[in-house]
Image (cartoon, helix red, strand yellow):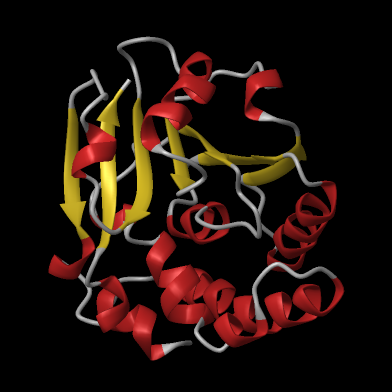
Length: 202
């Protein structure tokens, strides 16, 4: 079990530890078939992809039975780490690129995750409803909100958006109430110096 995860999440169950330990070999296998993560970046899988995804788990505890969609899931981040972290919730990842979804489905099957699914579909064409949206910097926040507003009943859900860098200008047009969580306050690694979770009331 990677020490970086137990450092910040010491209360993981034995099953969660086993599943997180499987991520490295599973992603190595699928990354060889489909370029999900660059070779250079793959060396930092634990920090830059898994732990980064779990930054959301540091700002919210999803209620049991919650339904969460990861829009633009790509290689399955934050989808897969969050599905491991919250086994009592249901996660669905969507992305327009079929080969990435096929790889994510392979990772899900390899982990034996029963609370997580993935589908090739654009967010504008997806018609399910959810309690929350998660995503990792697909586009600017105002554009992302426009693309996904139909996925959560108005006034009933939240978005947790992983972003980096300076956000002041990008947040100016956002009319919804939001809060910016600095991940540098919870993770001490240099990678998280400018990383944030933007929480938006939908």
